[in-house]
Image (cartoon, rainbow, N blue to C red; front, side, top):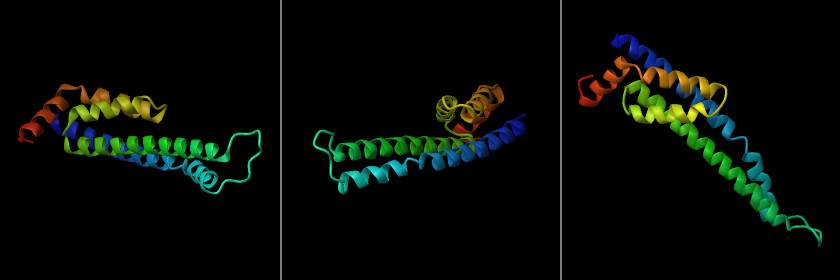
Length: 137
C-alpha cells in the first residue's frame, strides 16, 4: 500500500510542477501593463488641461501590473514547493494549504487541488508522511 501511495504522490508532484510552470507563464502576461505604465510614468505624453495627468495613469498601470505578476509568481512558487514536498513526502500541511489555494482557480487548479486533498487525507499517505518525518522512510 505504501508503494502505491508513493507512486500517487510522485504523479501529483509532477502535476504540481506542470501547474506551477503554467501559472508562471500566465503570470508574466501583465508585463505589457508594466511596460506601458513605465512608459507613461517616465516619459509622459502631453496631457490635456482638464484631464488627469498621464503619470497617474502610468503609476496605476505599473502598480497593478506588478501586483498581478507578483501574486501569480508567488502562487507558482507555492505550487512548485508543494510539488517538491509531495515528491519527498514532507510538509503535509504545506501541501494541503497549496492544494486549497489551487482549488480557488478553476478548472485545472480545482481538479489538482481536490485530488491532492483527497489523496493527502488517506491514512496510508498520512502514515507515509509521519514515517518520513520520524526519519524512518
